[in-house]
Length: 381
Image (cartoon, rainbow, N blue to C red; front, side, top):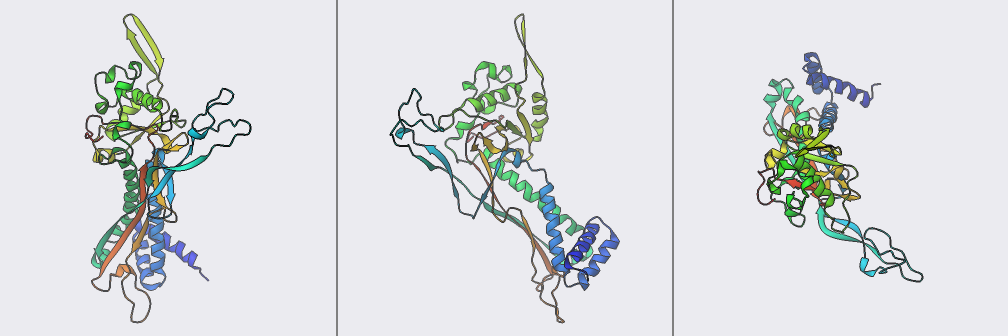
């Protein structure tokens, strides 16, 4: 006897053939839909497989610049850090003064100082995103599956791009006011030694520095030489990602591919090696949509600077992937049995498919994060 799983596999093959334009598969699938009471359930299962596959196969940029964080619900979650109470620690013991983010020495018969988890005023949360597509029973009949063929792929692409957008908005949205002053993460060439910014950006201010070898070098220097809020030196062991638009991506890759730097001072030529080998170019056309093609940012890869999360891409436990759902207000056949949703609704023969996605993003820490307007970002950044 044929099991439901075997029927589902056969149905999936017919559906895949229909998506590819196989007329025989389309005819068999239509026959299955009208004769098999399990067809509506099997179609939903197969469509969701197609949808999740398209979503997973999209080349998302966020995993390269953000850390995945799972939340339990829609309520904002406080971001906690383990902080040591320096004030209560022994002032000196054997010549070693207490250092933030380390365990202090404990003199004989003295109490242990207290470590606490404290909130730093930053929150992460998720939001609900989605859209609905409505079309008619006539469109289903006349379109020979081409409409249905596009739905899972298009919905998967939109869902994946939405996550990229949420992450990029934490950096480039001029309306963002989520961490201290926006100026704290701008490229400030006045603070960068001359040897780390080069002639390419000489005379320009930080907000207008376009992508150049000197500007990237200056941004990297600033990222590693700006103290964190706890007073410690920033470390980025995983390297950096340079986020830019496709219009700037090839220039950035060419600059990072340079092997030798020759500097001439009078009759002396100095040859040095490229120090930007720990930087990966990450491009997205969404940057141009948000603020302009010339804006760029240098951030720690994977959203981690040392043990600190910089950028978080949030999702909800149990609802980590988008959902594709069909409205099934079709009524019931007089002879009994369910009606496939593609036969149209009871009221007006319409067909509705909806995608729902629960996702969010947050900028939690400035360590290793440097922005440059490239000449087009608003004064809010």
